[in-house]
Length: 134
Image (cartoon, rainbow, N blue to C red; front, side, top):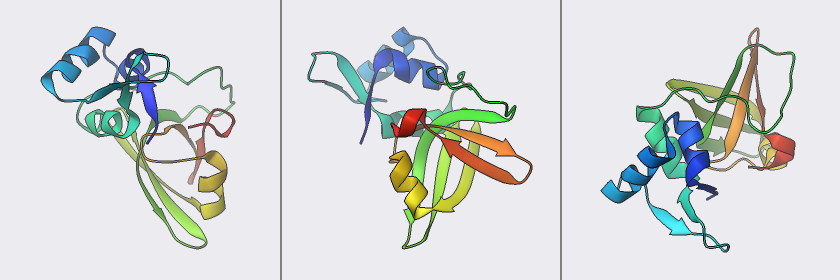
């Protein structure tokens, strides 16, 4: 599972860094220390908390697009078979489900707790990550 820094978790949850630290103290999120000695939380746990309480964050790291219906969120479920996949994102209070190829899931590096952007155009939902990173 991907891990993220406290400040990044706060951004995706729409709360302050201090709120995330309090949630760690209360056991709502589990914190560990990364190789650099920084406190990090599990991305999937953050996604689960986002299901219950959060606001939509802005787009991650300089991603630009002409699309206007963009929902930044965290991957909460992935169902993959040989050809197709179903990916569920929790985007603040919104749950977004996308059907895509299994190859796309692999190419994007999607896994539970990954940060992704759901781009909705007409009846099509496109999931983006920053250069395939989760």
